Each structure stands twice: as C-alpha cells, then as structure tokens.
Image 1 (cartoon, rainbow, N blue to C red):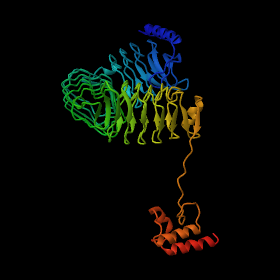
Image 2 (tube, rainbow, N blue to C red):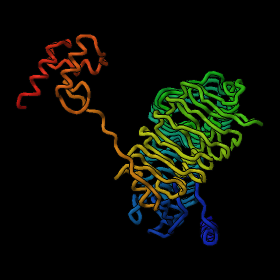
Image 3 (cartoon, helix red, strand yellow):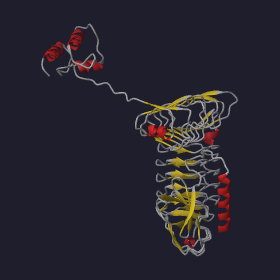
Image 4 (cartoon, one colour):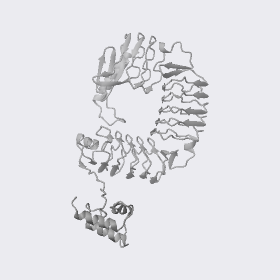
Length: 496
C-alpha cells in the first residue's frame, strides 16, 4: 500500500508536469511541494499542508500544527493505513479534515484524541483499530465522534457526541433515530439508504448536514430542521419521495445541488422554477427561451439551480435574496440580463461563470465573491463593486479579465485590480446632504432668502416639504410663523 501510494504520487507529478492548468472548483491549487518530517510524508498546497503517508514502523506520532509556516489542516486518505505498530497519535487543533481510511487497520492504536477543529471524518477512518475494541455497539466512538455502527433498527446516539462521520449508518436498517442536542456535524451519506426510517428530528446544535446524508430514505415522512443549521449538502435528502413538508430555517446559508430533488415537495411542482420553502432549488428543462422572475419572498438560490440551462435569457432576482449559491447560473450560455439585489450577502463560486452578462453591479451588501464567480464571462465589460471590504477570492479567474473594474480607493477590489493588472477607475463616495436649521432652500447658507421664503410660506404663497418645515422652525417654537423669518433676518445682520 505504502509503495503503491508513492508510485502513484510520482506518476501524478509527471502527469501534472505536462498538463495544461485549468481553473479548479474551489480555491485549492495543484500540489506544489512534497516532503518528509520525521515519520510523516506531506504535500504542501497554496495555503495548507496535507499529511499523506506515514512510515509503517512508527510507534507514535505527534503531527505538527505547521509545516513550512503553513497550517496542517488535512490528514489524507489512507495516510496511516495499516501502520500496525502505531499506538498513539497526537492530532493538532489545526486539522480540519480526516479523510477516509486515514487510520484504518492501525490495530494497536489506543490513543487519538480528535480536536474540536475537525469538521469532517471520512468513512472507515478508524475501523480495525484498538480504539474501537471493547465497545459493544451498535455505535462506536472515537473521542466525541460516532465513527462506525452495526446494523440496527433503532439508534440513540449518545449525548456529548459532536460529529457523525461519513457513511456511519449508511444502509444499516434504521427505523428509529435519536440525535442528541450536542451534534454539530452530520457527515456525508451518514444515514443514506435507510429505507424504513420514517421521521428525523435534526436538533438546533447541528450546523452542517453533509452530502447525501439522508438520501434514499424512501419512507421518510417527517423532517424537522431546527434553527441553527447553516449548510445542507448536495443530495442531502435526494429521493426521499414521500417527504412533502419541508421548512428551511433562516439560519441556512447554503443548500447543495439536488438537495431535495425527488422529494414529494419537489415532484409536486410543475416548474419551470422549483422551490423548497423560501429557496429556489432547480429549473426544469425547456425547449423555448425563458425570462424568469423568481418569486418574491425567496431568500436563497441553491447551488447549481440554473446550471447549464442554456434557454434562460434573463433572471429577475427579488429583494430579500441573500445567497446566490455555487454554480447558480454557471454555463447559462444565453443569460444576458441579471441584477443582483441590495439584500445579497454572498455570491458563490462559479455563480455567474460562462454567461453573457455585459455588466454587473455588486451591491454594498455583498461581503463575499467566490472563486471563478465571473469566470468566462467574455461579454463582461464593466463590474462595479460597492463594498470596500468585500472578500474577493484571490484568483485571477474570479473576475473575467475583459471587465473594467469600478472600485473605491484602498478597497479590496482596488487591491484585486492592482494585483491582477486589471483596468479600473475609482468610485466616489456620495456625501449625504447636510441639513442646517434655517437653511430652508438648501443652498448651504442662512440668509435673507430663507427669511423671505418663510414669510411667503406663512401667508400661503409657497408650500414646504416636511423637511423644509423642520428647517424653517428657526426659533424652535414648534411651529413655523413670521417670528422665524424675523429671527433669521436678525441672524443675517448680527456677528456669528
């Protein structure tokens, strides 16, 4: 296994050397450097390090939190697989991901505390280790994570559990399930294919529901999603074909592609646009060109909703939409008209890639522009970015190079334009009007003309707006009368 992985790595490097680079989905770059540190082999990427292998003779390992001044965030697939001598591993709190089979077959591994930084554990990551010996099931734990299960019709996950690893309960015959209010992460395909599971209550502690987490649970009738959930992965409830009532909490800021496809709530709609509660989740194919108006009250556009829909020519997005998901309009090759509303907070990766939009205004409300959001927009001539602190993914592919950028000085958009040598000009900050008591004609000074205007107003010759009435009450008596005109006249001739 170890030799095979090293050969594979060599072949991969050779292939990369002759391959033309193309943009990747996400901000990760190709592997740049590999090396060793003690028993460990690692790969360095642009902004993180992955542990990829370990000497099978290692008795214990202390994984460093940094290598070459970059954080170690990932323990790769099969990195420690079959390290049969290994008894103890220390995982630093820089690690976010532990991939599948990472410690599989480490039969003497008795100590491996999982830090709170970890948000994902792959399937069988700790299978066939001493860590699981002595546990009676049906659920097996490492630290605060459920990592393995036996087939069981009823499962009550123990309180204190923080994460459910990928595939733990996949196809295990569940009929009833209890998830405690300590679980934050439900992994990919965690409950996939439990065709007899009828009800699921996701507690408010949960932040992430992974890809395919409850897919193919064909008997699922009731789903309770508590406030607190932030992300629902792609195909999370795919083909739960009896599921009719679905409420999306306001806390959700990401819904993956096909998350609710072929639920009853989905299949009962005739389109062309398909909604799940307050989210747009799909657009059905059409043989004619369509100009689409998204329903008022919509809060989010799920990942991939309009991807590859080359019949969509224009989209009207209503105020209130906060999230435009990854690949939301990617490769809508006829799309030439779109307006991003002032309510939008996030524009996902590839959101408008490969469209025909000629110009776009990114409103001040937008705080994030994802990787390749406007990549391949060959008609894009102008892009205005109004939020000086907007986080723009640091890649030359995020905004198509054809676009002239309109930016504020010393803003994040200015920094992007300078770094990637883009044509740009400066936006100016519009100063709000200054209202001064007595200056009823708003010419910037208090003079005899204001006094005359007030006098005319008191005899009905002219009308004031409510704002002018407030400015005209110069003596602050609570009403506008001739005494205000007299007070202003005196003011104009007195030193001040």
